[in-house]
Length: 217
Image (cartoon, rainbow, N blue to C red):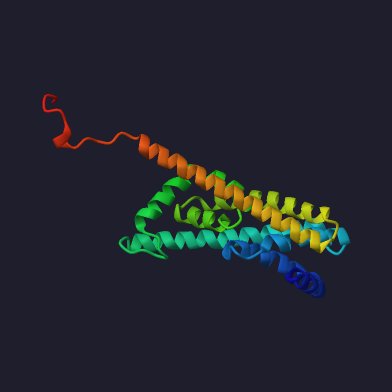
């Protein structure tokens, strides 16, 4: 299995194995399909084995997450500047009207999304791109991202310690975790979709001038 090869690689690198853990946490933001959670879980296994201090693993993977968040935030700022310079164009399928909608939503719910972003696989990076595009204060965004990364990484490392160094149990645990979170995201997306559809149907339709009662002013 690939995780066994990564385990051997980190073990062979010695102190430089921390670099692999940090880069894995960063790539989860920049390249969402990257299975960084699994590699971070291995940090808990190393702590059980006595190979690497758990607190140092926590610091490294948190720093990697914050670096990835910073990169995505910068991408969001770049997108906003491109639209300002050329408002009539679309970039990566994103129109100016869509960008303005994303910016409005981030200004309303942005802090909460940033606070839980690390627990949302697949879209955590997009949240920071949206934060950068919405021009949310960089310091505030990264502080919230750091809190989220610390909480998530601490939980992941604790789970890694709970499996007691068993790579097979680790793989099963990560798969269940990721499927559970993705399932919750799908359910939440469907809920928001149904709610939006219900609101649209419930909103009154404005009458056209020709259909109005002629005796009313």
